[in-house]
Image 1 (cartoon, helix red, strand yellow):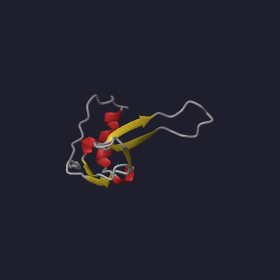
Image 2 (image 1 turned 90 degrees about the vertical axis):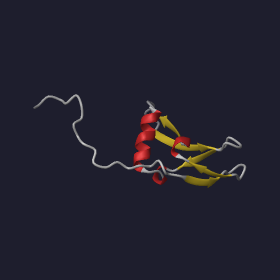
Image 3 (image 1 turned 120 degrees about the vertical axis):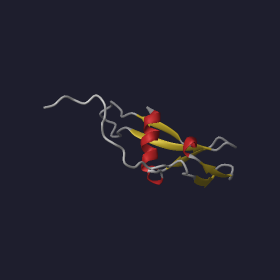
Image 4 (image 1 turned 180 degrees about the vertical axis):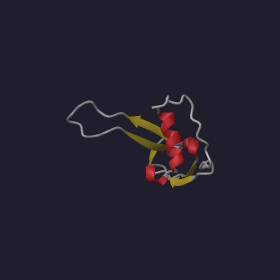
Length: 93
Protein backbone atom coordinates (compact mmCIF):
# COMPACT_ATOMS: atom_id res chain seq x y z
CA UNK A 1 0.00 0.00 0.00
CA UNK A 2 1.21 3.44 -0.89
CA UNK A 3 1.12 6.60 1.14
CA UNK A 4 -2.14 8.51 1.39
CA UNK A 5 -1.92 11.64 -0.79
CA UNK A 6 -2.04 14.92 1.12
CA UNK A 7 -3.40 16.87 -1.85
CA UNK A 8 -5.66 15.83 -4.70
CA UNK A 9 -3.93 15.64 -8.05
CA UNK A 10 -7.10 14.97 -10.01
CA UNK A 11 -7.93 17.53 -12.70
CA UNK A 12 -11.45 18.95 -13.00
CA UNK A 13 -12.37 18.71 -16.67
CA UNK A 14 -15.80 20.26 -16.48
CA UNK A 15 -17.82 21.83 -13.69
CA UNK A 16 -21.48 22.79 -13.69
CA UNK A 17 -22.16 26.52 -13.43
CA UNK A 18 -25.41 27.20 -11.61
CA UNK A 19 -24.90 30.96 -11.16
CA UNK A 20 -27.76 31.65 -13.59
CA UNK A 21 -30.18 29.39 -11.66
CA UNK A 22 -33.46 31.12 -10.83
CA UNK A 23 -36.58 29.92 -9.02
CA UNK A 24 -39.81 31.81 -9.57
CA UNK A 25 -42.58 31.34 -7.03
CA UNK A 26 -45.51 33.05 -5.34
CA UNK A 27 -45.37 33.53 -1.58
CA UNK A 28 -48.03 31.39 0.06
CA UNK A 29 -48.83 34.01 2.69
CA UNK A 30 -48.77 37.40 0.91
CA UNK A 31 -49.03 36.22 -2.74
CA UNK A 32 -46.00 38.27 -3.81
CA UNK A 33 -44.32 37.06 -7.02
CA UNK A 34 -40.65 36.39 -6.32
CA UNK A 35 -37.53 35.17 -8.11
CA UNK A 36 -34.81 33.53 -6.02
CA UNK A 37 -31.10 33.09 -6.81
CA UNK A 38 -28.63 30.58 -5.32
CA UNK A 39 -27.52 33.04 -2.62
CA UNK A 40 -31.14 33.29 -1.38
CA UNK A 41 -31.38 29.60 -0.43
CA UNK A 42 -31.28 28.89 3.31
CA UNK A 43 -29.93 25.42 4.06
CA UNK A 44 -30.29 23.77 7.47
CA UNK A 45 -28.65 20.51 8.57
CA UNK A 46 -30.44 18.27 11.07
CA UNK A 47 -28.14 15.59 12.56
CA UNK A 48 -29.41 12.09 13.27
CA UNK A 49 -30.90 11.42 16.67
CA UNK A 50 -29.03 9.25 19.17
CA UNK A 51 -32.36 7.91 20.43
CA UNK A 52 -32.77 4.32 19.13
CA UNK A 53 -36.56 4.81 19.06
CA UNK A 54 -36.12 7.58 16.47
CA UNK A 55 -36.05 6.16 12.95
CA UNK A 56 -34.95 9.38 11.23
CA UNK A 57 -31.43 9.82 9.91
CA UNK A 58 -29.73 13.14 9.33
CA UNK A 59 -31.16 15.39 6.62
CA UNK A 60 -31.02 18.85 5.06
CA UNK A 61 -33.79 21.33 4.30
CA UNK A 62 -33.69 24.05 1.65
CA UNK A 63 -35.84 27.13 2.19
CA UNK A 64 -36.49 30.58 0.74
CA UNK A 65 -37.63 33.52 2.89
CA UNK A 66 -40.13 36.01 1.48
CA UNK A 67 -38.64 39.53 1.84
CA UNK A 68 -42.14 41.02 2.27
CA UNK A 69 -43.71 38.87 5.02
CA UNK A 70 -40.82 36.61 6.20
CA UNK A 71 -42.75 33.44 5.35
CA UNK A 72 -40.61 30.41 4.48
CA UNK A 73 -41.06 28.46 1.25
CA UNK A 74 -39.59 24.94 1.12
CA UNK A 75 -37.55 23.85 -1.89
CA UNK A 76 -37.38 20.19 -2.86
CA UNK A 77 -33.85 18.87 -3.34
CA UNK A 78 -34.85 17.28 -6.64
CA UNK A 79 -35.51 20.77 -8.08
CA UNK A 80 -32.01 22.07 -7.32
CA UNK A 81 -28.90 21.56 -9.47
CA UNK A 82 -26.72 18.77 -8.03
CA UNK A 83 -23.61 20.95 -7.86
CA UNK A 84 -25.56 23.62 -6.01
CA UNK A 85 -26.67 21.04 -3.43
CA UNK A 86 -23.04 20.02 -2.84
CA UNK A 87 -22.01 23.66 -2.28
CA UNK A 88 -25.02 24.38 -0.03
CA UNK A 89 -24.25 21.35 2.14
CA UNK A 90 -20.65 22.52 2.55
CA UNK A 91 -21.97 25.93 3.61
CA UNK A 92 -24.33 24.36 6.20
CA UNK A 93 -21.68 22.51 8.19
